[in-house]
Image (cartoon, rainbow, N blue to C red; front, side, top):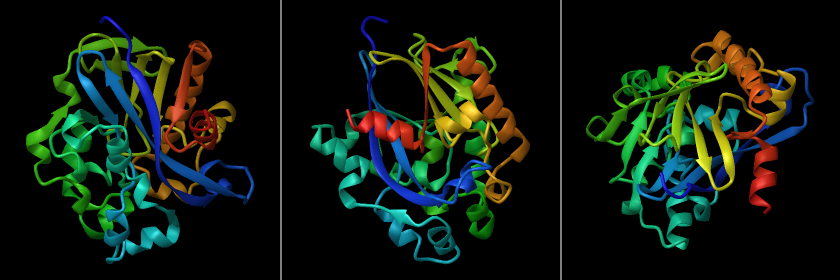
Length: 276
């Protein structure tokens, strides 16, 4: 690959939760969990998104039972101008210019903007692609999914990771899938929080970065091995795997100090990146 990826993190809005819910043994202070989206530019493959974040349509969807429960559990702070499609327009990027959209997992704060990018190829883990469309009603809510946020042509546009070439193994994190066959974006499994959750290791102009999705809620959780509480893990796909993935992320961080790990909702990442 000639040239390097460029990357920008965009804030699509946030919810407010007590700190102790997402990191055991911490305080009751409110934690603002921003839903960050990575806008990536590949020198040959153009514009790529890692997740699509919140979107204004979510407020209407959450007015309907049973999904309104989510709004009460995690109060949302959404502004129309933070919709990713709107932020891209301000940068001169139309929805059709997004060639690929990587779905880390199908929780609503990661996919609410999917409908805004009708031309993008949707890359996701096969287990997630098989599982998410089956869920309805309370079963969907319990897994953080709202079915109407899924595009109706998901099957036609989806590219499961098992159809991609294999990349190198990452220490403690395991096998990868090489999205473009050039080593620039390696997708890796981060199980537990959601069925088929993916992270992405990027070789970029910002250095080597690991987009960790919700493999950890915060950078502090990785440093101090603080998993979410059992209450929060009621929505997890596999609570035991949540803790195992957190431990693997810390081990990876220790073995690869050159890699900056970026959890989607981390206040440190939000403050450090968006204040530049």
